[in-house]
Length: 222
Image (cartoon, rainbow, N blue to C red; front, side, top):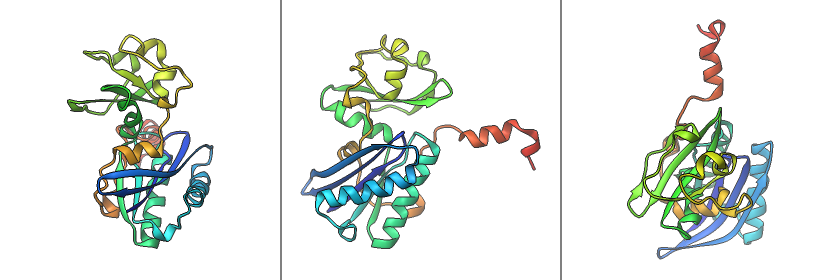
């Protein structure tokens, strides 16, 4: 099965082309691009990754989308792009958490991982991954996070709030690849079971900024 994985939940747009056969998953090509405009960058990265893998979009059998948490605009762009590709090619859809993708490479280096993404507004999205299973996704201030053991702490949230989070466990150097969300991480960690287009649900965790501003502005209410 040929897989096209894509993520725009963070400032880095990520795309991978992979093949899954008999329980094994092999990444054929992977591209990550720092971009301001996720829509244009994502489409370009998709074509570049397919070219690098020597594959055609029509051959894709599963489109795997990262559905957050992360930037609301990026999550929507990834989901709508995945739906459009599915509609045009007949490929089935699958989804995966951005935090699971972030944690996947780190779990090959440590049995206990705390994945932390910068959620802005002085908060982080965080989730624990270990042999005991996955914890709940939290959106909290960095100083409110706690850990009974000492996990490997990864993600751009761990970099930004290193001083507040270093008490929890080991944080790799700022330039470590473990702090980046990758499409390869999605391939490694996702349940590839197909979902309907309407079930490709974003993981927002909290209200989008636009809704918060609307609620705070009495003139915007009906």
